[in-house]
Amino acid sequence: MKPFYLFIFTFSLAFTVRGEVPGGDDESRPYAARLSLSDVTRAVLENNPSIKSARKKWNAMKARVPQLAAWEDPKVSLEVNAARYVSVQPNSFANQTVTLEQMIPISGKNRARARVATAEALSVYEETRRQELDVVAKARTAYFSLANVYAQMELNRKNLVSLKQIAEVSRSSYEAGNQSAAFVLTAETECSKLMEAQRDLDQQRAAEESQLNVLMNRDAFAPVGEPVATEMTHDIPSVEKLRDIALSQRPEVRMAAAKVEQGRASLQLAHREWIPDPAVNIEAQRYNDSDQGASEVDAGISFNIPWVNPRKYSEGIHEAEENLEAAQQDLERARSEAVGLLRDALQKVETKHHHIELFRDRLVPEAEQAFEASQLGYESGKISFMDWIAAQRNLRDLESQAREHLRDYQSAIAELESVAGVELEAITEHNPKTTAANKITHP
Image (cartoon, rainbow, N blue to C red; front, side):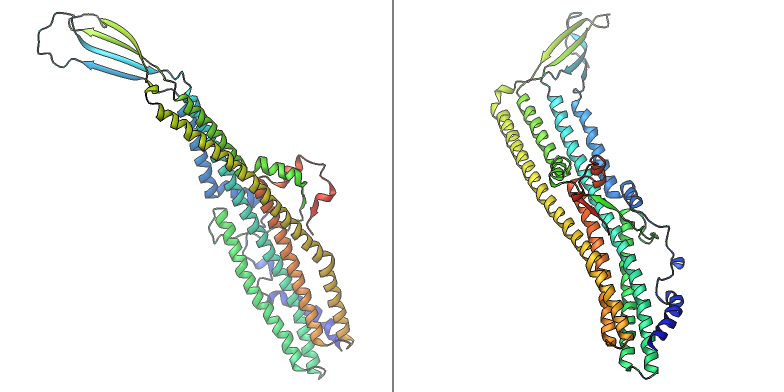
């Protein structure tokens, strides 16, 4: 009787359970078109407010460079005699005086200030890159989490179909007097648990969709398409190549290097403060009784004398030297941290990939075989109903864990790219001879 009931309910429930499972009908879901990872990345880079703000700050810093490289503005002064209360001889005093003065930066202070501003702009640019990397990594992690939720929902639906079949077989056996009512209640309880888990998955889906919408600068309630299933392969470069990439491309390292260049330019500027910049002036005078436009034209030069205040400028040099040494130490620290974070990220990728292989090649196939064997054993009366339920639950849990490990692996790849400061695809495009030993493939 058991095979007969199982046969009947397998076909009947296959057409009815999708309407009973929340979210089981794909055509009735009010979602947008399917969403790809490239669409998410592009939308985040184009619309995320944090990235836009960082880019504006970088543009503002670039605008400072030509300002500081420019010469000082020329000065023009005009003096007019307002009143004279004594008698003077004709053409003995000037009634109007016009003076034009221009400082000549022969010391190169303006160029040194421009180099300082250029290093600051480069540092802000690297901060922009870090903002982009962090937001993109966060968006990709949310995308992978959303894809995992959809996969878990599909697994939950399939398991609910299977459990409903088991429940119906148990109910039929109970009605025939071959089983206890406890078995029927156990199967129905498992079905109820899966129905409740579906509600939790709906909540997780809404949370991940909200996060993606916020990162893409969209309304949190806007519909988000179902993520496209990705069967990506990642060519993981060697540790030596990744180390070189992280030390050359990681924004924190490049920021620290820019601070060093800024310190060197500041030290050069401090030394040049000792050099006075002359100011050349031309003065035109018109006398009190002259018919000419200019009665006299004079030329002069003036400059400050920094040597009378040696402590001021020597302490400025000392300050710049200390700041330069501090920047060099910060660069060393940034390099050490980059290597440490790279090792942690690589270890995480390796561990997650090991979990994927273990579940894909051993645990899930073995659980599937155990479930099939338990089903046959139950039909033949060799194992109990509870063993059948336990095998089904074990398979369900292992399939769910396998999908979660895939999500964790994909998130670990995104974290590795954020640590290295470059996408793995960009690395492999310029390194097509990556060895097979370094290749990690999604299941």
